[in-house]
Image (cartoon, rainbow, N blue to C red):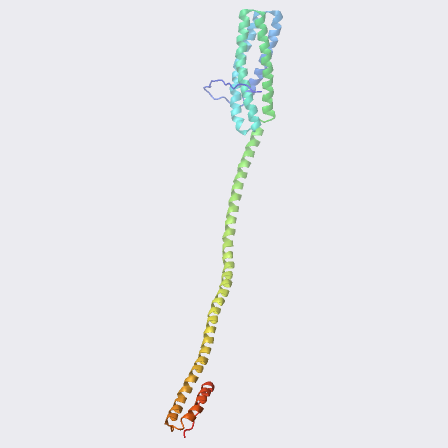
Length: 294
């Protein structure tokens, strides 16, 4: 059930004490019922004194409902922060319906005054119908108020104390959660700090192992380079020996040629023919041969 939002634009010059709302509520429920009973009796009696009494009670009803409204507003504001979301919605509707009832008391007073002035049956009947509707809404308001107190614990001291303790425990729990989170972060930071030296220690042997094969490879490369150099050095003496051997034969053969030149002319052709193959053999055998001169 949704109603247009209305309010009473009046601010009291004093602060309303708490827990006064139930006092006003008892009179707010009783007075309309009393007025209805008087009006039903006065249908047959038709006495002006009864009508004046009803009008006086309706004037008192306006005062009671205004007091109940502001007392309930004070109590509701005090308990609103401690209520559940469902209870808050119930309290808001209770306040709105109470505002309508306050304005309803003013309408009842005007209708009763009109019926007394007109003195017509239709005016009295219209007032009675509106009074019955008002009482029905009043009972609905009383039921909602009872649920707020007995089901949701609005302005119940024991419930308020328990709620306050629960709130304190919730605050303590939040503080403990924050401290636990801080301790976990510190432990994680310590574990990371302890893991860093261990990783560096594990990385150091790995670097040494990686450096050892590199040094072996670098040392083996000069050996391989030196080996061909040594081979080339071994080859060069042999070649030099082969090269020097013909040189020595030519040097040794030089005196032999000079001795051939000093020999007699008639003997030059024969030894020369014999010397030719000897020179060839000398170059092949690389051993010196002395040719006798005649």
